[in-house]
Length: 138
View 1 (cartoon, rainbow, N blue to C red):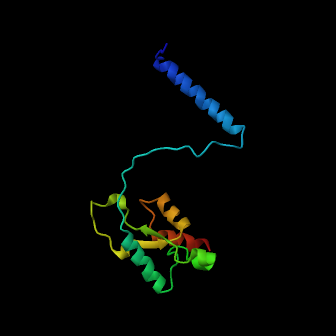
View 2 (cartoon, rainbow, N blue to C red):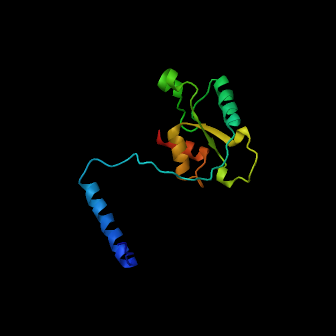
View 3 (cartoon, rainbow, N blue to C red):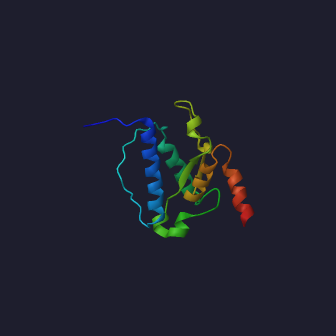
């Protein structure tokens, strides 16, 4: 027969299994991954044509490089890196009103590492500020 456990018993059960998981993680080098999750997300629409035009313009000028650190994917990876770079919105899309306009100057071409660093402090770290951090390190 099915019996509903009391709230305090469920808390103890959950707590015990959390402790058990921690013990298991400390004693093994293997971790379960690859489970399938279904999620529903709200996402801001991006204009791929705008990004393509910014990349094409930079490529035509011969400078498809990271605006922060200067990495050139073609120079580093050869044909594999040809034409590759990420595009960062200087004004976070999360702050946009629906259908707000973006200009080419609102975008920065950056490598994946610099892009991730920009997102670590999205509210306060600008492309120029990160560029200064990188320049001051070398």
